[in-house]
Image (cartoon, rainbow, N blue to C red):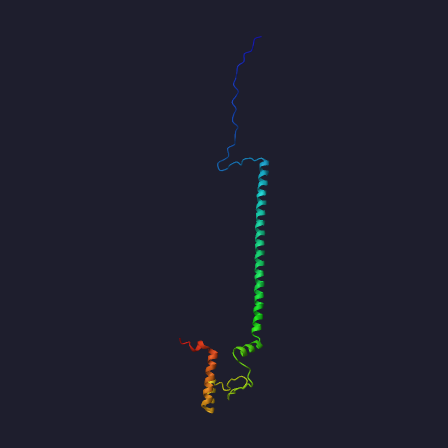
Length: 177
């Protein structure tokens, strides 16, 4: 037997793997393994959990700040209410008639009169001091002045001027400036 002759034949070339080319405008989504999808889902859930924690902390901080502001306002309100009570007590103490009488007698050398007299002008009612014929103060002054003489007229004019000063004040007399 004769030896067989061996020829070396090169191995056939490997063909590259074929891919399906998508139509223009459509891209084929790359396939992901189920482990990759699970990892992404876990990562997204951790991010959502972290964000919800940050939002909760933010709301808790705002609530604490609002509580502190409420306490500050409440304490300021208590101080103002105490000040108002003190001022009301001061007003009632200052408006005490006995205190006013003491100040008037001590500081201004005033005293209570021994007898109180009232002047009744004819043509007026005694209780209100208004004229019965609604003529006004000038009409009453003119009628009294003609009846009683110059002294009463002068006194009435002086009293009317003093009353006008008391009602209008010093600014009313100098309002022409």
